[in-house]
Amino acid sequence: MAWRPASSEARVGPRRCVAFTKAAHGASRSRYAVPSGIGKRHTRPPRPDTEHVFPHRVQDLVARQPRLDQAAHGIGNCVQQPDPMQKLTLAHQTMFADLVQRCQDAAFDEQFPEGGSFVRHTRRGRDYWYYVPSQRDHPTRTHVYVGPCDDPEIDKRVSGFRSLKASYRERRMLVSSLRGAGLPHPNPITGDVIEALWKAGFFRLRGVLVGTVAFQTYAGLLGARLPGTAMMTGDIDVAQFHSISQMVDDTMAPIGEVLTRVDQSFMPLPQLNSRDLAAAYRNDQGYKVEILTPNRGSNEHQGKLTRMPALSGGGAEPLRHLDFLIYQPVTSALLHKGGVPVSVPAPERFLVHKMIVASRRRSDGYAKAAKDLMQVELLIEAMVADRRGDDIGVAWMEAWERGPNWRKRLIESARRLMPQPNDALRISIEAACLVDQKQADDYGVLEIRL
Image (cartoon, rainbow, N blue to C red; front, side, top):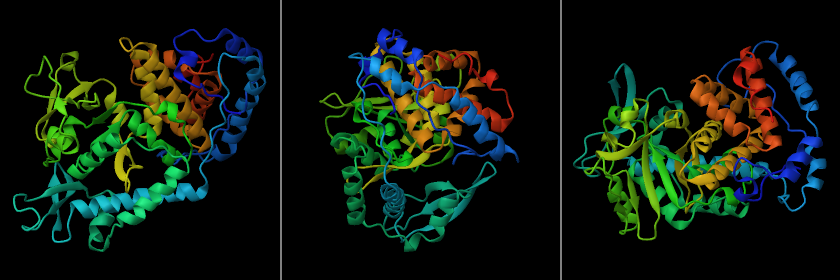
């Protein structure tokens, strides 16, 4: 049985429950299945002998782990024992994949009417698709950025866009079935805001949905029912690289204007250092929307908003470590109305980034840090069950190589995980190191051991 805390209060702060700690370390832990070979997003080819060496190596590692199930009997009232994470049926996993594809088709059809045409433009040595609308559809616009020509999905859609038809009614039926199967869905204001951003072109301009709302979409991607306690939020965070915002040579309506179409009470929040820009908006119910961008420069940029050309010159707040999170995002769907296609961080990058963020929590106290670590533990369990543990190891290795400050924060958060996900994390790192022919000891497996 997989153990997870019933709430963030179960292990808030660095001190754990004494009863659980003694029981967990004095008894054995449950076996945590780890994938063999290369994961779905792994881009490096395996060594010829990997398929023979890797499973035996993992079996040796797992065999050394004691069983946690026996320790659970001594926990008492310290924590609750929820049911194990349930996998979605193959039919529902296929249904979610179909919904994502249909949502992508719908987004393409609605934003690029059949009266227009597609043309290639070369910028900085790379070819990109642009859509030229008809004068009837957009009399004031000459071209709209679509995406790189070497993206096979975009190229496929450009070739056959006249035949793409989206059925809103069919997509609503898919959404209803998936929600009935236990997949999470956003509250109405969250769904309406993200739908408005999608229709305004935010995700087409390579914006990324981050934060807890993005976490909701991983249930369908990983084929697991994630508990709702880890998905409660009162805000939306979206992000975009500043370099992309400059390069695409296209723009969307101002974020503030898009938000007021949903709720007229949305107002920009003033910033002392940037009085003429806004990177956050709040309505009269206290619901907040923030626009972020990575800060890969000096600390002088912290606290100073950056002007984003693709967002009609609106502002975005620069944040450290965000470039790691939103690099190479994946496509998912939000279960709202007929489905809303969104770009979200790869789940392995999301969980490693959450470990960095959790160790940086200061003013927010331990509550948000505990929620971050709960999401990390859930993603570790779901990804290992989906045979993608090596993806976690690859993301960890990339973050580990970014310097001593990153390593310090990773170690701190990893040692605050519960024993079972901690074991799975270490085994995933060792598995990825084995494929890369690197020493796992050089990537912190000894430092993070509980």
